[in-house]
Length: 331
Image (cartoon, rainbow, N blue to C red; front, side, top):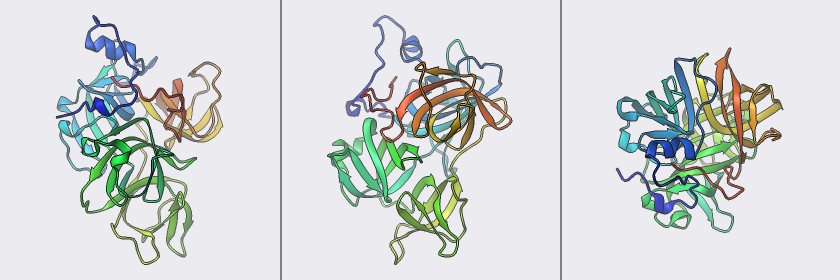
């Protein structure tokens, strides 16, 4: 299945003792996982795939052998279609706190951008796709079809980008980039801004999109686009769907994303999900939360709110949390 692609990784921080078992290495050396919850019978995890053996997301090992695997459009995928760095949503049974394992029911793979690269700036480690800035970081994994990394992305070529999206800065911090050949449609997941119901347009970042059915202003939404812009240079929406998900109450939840709106530690939003971290253990100690920070939040859903037990600040959203040079943990 050619999963590892380790020759393309520029940063891996999971180093374990030689005589430790692979399972213990993955679970203990890298940390992560859902802490202090454990009474729920279901769980929900969201973030980039950080390793295999089983599918590893946020430090939890999910046995994907019996899971239903689909993409964001509902098309069935196979286990071999899962790749390092892909961003996924996993609905599973309860997480075993001792082994940090769970049995997933559904794994949903969702990229953030599919479209032509309009610019490739190696100096700033930035691509422009569908008018959006895509940041290449220490955690970005390139598909084998882009063996030269960012330098292999030709202007005008179509790529699929799996990213951690920061609606505050508008930057997509790439976790995985793959080449695409003649897709039937382009796609973008982003926050709707500047909605104009007269002109029937909206913006994601600085790019203008034309629609026939109005989206919800301010909401993170996934759009399917025609592959040719209209005469005004606007990408034309052909379909739309919800770009975020609210897990069921009493679910154990772990999500890695960016704080998009912040009022207080008891009231902020991560990837469209309301979070109350007023009683959470925050790492590093003394960290001050704010919009634009990339965080990993662990807790339990209560009345539609994620009540956090633990919150770890990973870094800024626009560099994917790699500003310290550490990169994403790979197991």
